[in-house]
Image 1: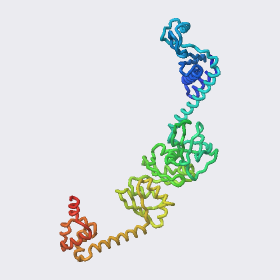
Image 2: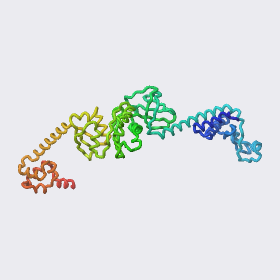
Image 3: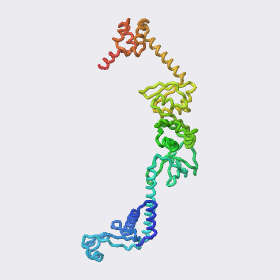
Image 4: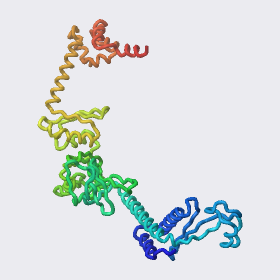
Length: 425
């Protein structure tokens, strides 16, 4: 049976343009023809098909076992009939009986078409997947093709991609035909083929935009050490230079702000603060609260927290609208940040001093001023210091006897040695 010569030309064209090997197409067509033949001759029949890629000739055979007595004609052939095909066969051999394939002409053509379409679809899916799976993390340009269940369908040229609603900036609006720039977030394989997932909210979209706009970032002369973003609102980027002659902030801002403005324009007006990254956490946190000016900071290393004091008029600026500025600064620096105005800090200190004074007054109630002065000179003027001192240390203070010590102990609690004893018990 002859296959249309045009089909062979299609095989060669598909191999050149789509990378589909002719051998794979031929194998698929042969397998499909075997399946078609079994529908005619029985599912248990052993069939095989051969397609000559040089001539286009297709041959279909039924394979049977040579036996003396035939019990199943679909699987067996008598020795007498078999020797008409091959005089040297013996019982137990297998022979291949060529089938008149004329009745398969239409089936063969349909099968070849189906196989080519299927292989073409599979090859295109594979090519798309291979092409885009290696580009995860890159920025691509596309055209808004349509909308589906809140997602934006983006035409990338070779395939359509999806920009899910959760990856869209809430205040951005698009219509069909608009050009759009997105970040390739993921590429998935599913039953319908590869699915390219895009994003415009991912923090890496911001970083990749700087990589495109700032040559020093692309060349790793300037490094973006950390970044924080609230898509559509505001971002903060901390940069450091690996070249002492290059100002990292200036490189990212560009002449008259041209570079950062390009990023801002792409993000449709999202504000971007670029600050120098510093190893000193206090200075880094202070810079991260830009444009607010910090007066001083109080660091709690154990809890990785900072209390930042700013001038009264700078408080709202430091906190930002709905707390955005301080929230981004905390994420950028990885420190827990509490902001207070000078007035708040002073009031809290005064309140704490009053509380401490009241505690001291209660502690020394009924104790002579002479003993109080002696304790103060020895460094035991606060409740905490007396609580931590041993009885021997306190009794060494001139004028302080056991009765006064007992009175102090009652007010501050047991001595360190007594606490240790209780724990030991």
